[in-house]
Amino acid sequence: GKLIIDSIVIAADQGMEPLAGLRYVVPYLALEFALLLIGSMASQIRSLFDRIIQSQLTNHVNSLIIRKAISLDLQFFENPVFYDTLQNARRQADTSALTIVNSTLQMVQQVITIISLIVLLLRFSPWLAVIVFLSAIPSFLSNSQFAERAFRAVSRRAPEARLLNYLEQLLTGSDTVKEIKLFGLGEPLLKRYQTLFTQFFLEDRAIAEKRTIAGLGWGMLSNLVYYGSYAWIVLRTIAGLITLGDMTMFLAIFRQSQTSIRSLLDSLNRLYESNLFLDNLMTYLKQEPLLVAPADGIIAPAPIRHGIEFRNVSFCYPGSDVYVLRDINLQIRPGERIALVGLNGAGKTTLIKLLTRLYDPTDGQVLLDGIDLRDYDLKSLRQRFGVIFQDFVRYQFTVQENIGFGQVDALDDLERIREAANRGGASPIIENMHNGYETMLGRRWEKGQELSGGQWQKIALARAFMRKAEVLVLDEPTSALDAEAEYEVFRRFGELVEGRIAVLISHRFSTVRMADRIVVLSVGKIIELGSHA
Picture 1: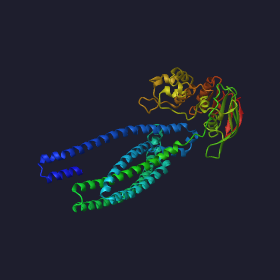
Picture 2: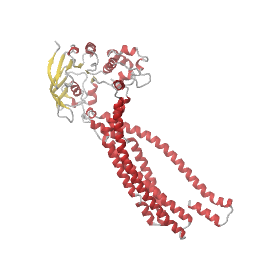
Picture 3: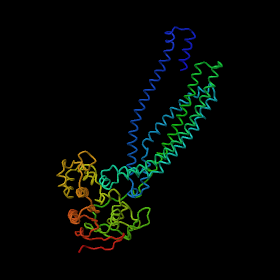
Picture 4: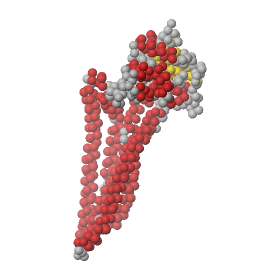
């Protein structure tokens, strides 16, 4: 800018012809145009890289979060504090990572720019260089304070944010739509959603308003500093101490210095704010599973030769001092069919959680072939169990995947999947589907087929039969069936276990008559043990 203005002034002072004067100025104009063009191209390339990096970072961060969730124990997922940690970890983690990368690069660029500008400014007036730095600091400190305040507010309300998400899922989910409509819950739940959202909005707005007011105040100070410096530079120009081109250059340098320093501090602020959010991610990722297998864990036996033993087992869930199982002593012989019977809350499912080492006993031991479960390699141990819980998963995937998930490494073995479907009683259902084993299940996808409760149960049973497990467990997956239908499922299951240990769970005695022994649980204790006869 200085060179262009000075060349125009020289051309005018020398009385050059317009075309001659233009030729004198054109090289500087061409240089400025080239620099602007390069800057524009660099900006577009950077935007492209930002989009690419953002996509990769999103995938990477989400994968880290999911992989950590996979590694953690069941007890984490039965603790609301874990979900608050997860909620905070997910929030802005991917964008914060990109912001840190971008802010760091911008800071390097801005530091280089500022150094070059300050060198020029120092030649004119060291005091201006000091003033331009000091005028930007109050705004930086104010923004940092409000950024932390906003972060604390967002982190504090993680439980309410989860409730907001849950309400949205209730109001838009296919699993809940029938009850929502029949009970007229739509408007009441929507009102609760809006009330909670408004609470968040008002809190965020209050912080934003205070931040804006503070920003306006510090912005006014910055403008006063600029125009005060502007007046001083103009006075020096009028006094003939500097040229018109010098004045233009120093005004531009001062304004650019202000802008660059403000941008540098803004980048530092974004870096600080993003680090706050990434700290939540790091807190989540630092969690470690509590059920740890020894490094040289024993491979679980196949076949089981001596059976399973619960020896003086008592258990209370983490964070509670109420025992849900107390002094359980039970031996299960190889090939034996055991039925666990009791009312809801008797401890039947908890017993299975200990058997499959989803939890460790609070007191006592669970032994497999005389060895504590804690001494086995955890992966090989769980391979020995085939379990269908009462709240089995209805995977919104193909029939083949729904059954094949029982043994992931055999997911493409259609012959084995057909055999499992036949053993689980699902074959007639699948044969009537429009696309057989490739039929998508559920209404989530186009051409997906929804199943009845009983049909889903047979798919789940087929999934259990996919695994060549040593111990098969049915934890009331047939509770939606009537007693006669449930008995038929258990009878069929008992015939198909082929000498393996089978554990059948029910709250009805009439459905477990085929069991070799029946264990009656009440309030976490075994109160009766024997056969149906």
